[in-house]
Length: 293
Image (cartoon, rainbow, N blue to C red):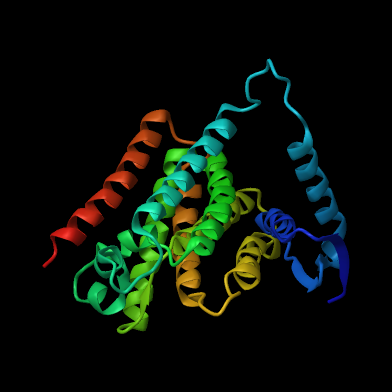
């Protein structure tokens, strides 16, 4: 299939943002690197739609709000604030646990040790999401997580977005542990981050199905999610590709159910309950971790 060069930049995060915007609408982009430039390519047939989507995205992000005006959308504001709170807590917790260390009690008790999870220490599938190998690890998850959590919050609300993301991450860690078994050990929020990719894909599939779009158009969000996994989730020597894949696959049915259940963000009480449940699950996981003999 012929491709067209859509955008070129020296900013790696910028080209990834462009690719994510397109993938969320079912357009698969391909990133190439030729130092110092990063180029985004798209199929020739999708080039016009892709150009329009990026123009809209750029206009929305470049338009300065009036100083006296409130946010254009309360849900947008709440989604961003919720995402910011989550990633701030993620980074703050890293300053407590520190980087991966075999002598660290945090990593000894909280890592997603496949053998121990399979033997019943299910709390590790939760606690491991809060541990990170180093600053680069936590920073990359915080940056991508903030972007995706904000996008998800705009669709289902910030509290529900947080709760569903945690659920997808836990599901991905459990599947990873069962299928890969000991001595595999992993840490990091990236399973939940790719869970968000799966959730967004599931939500988009439901919306497209409701609009009675063609089978090809309905399937595009899944193709976009897999493209994101290929572009971002497989780079690096220490990347746990399987955890990323299982997180995405765990998020997909969650997104399908959420899309079927909610056509607009649930009310505030549901948002609060979902966020509180997620926080409680994280706290309980660490209580169980330190209570274990």
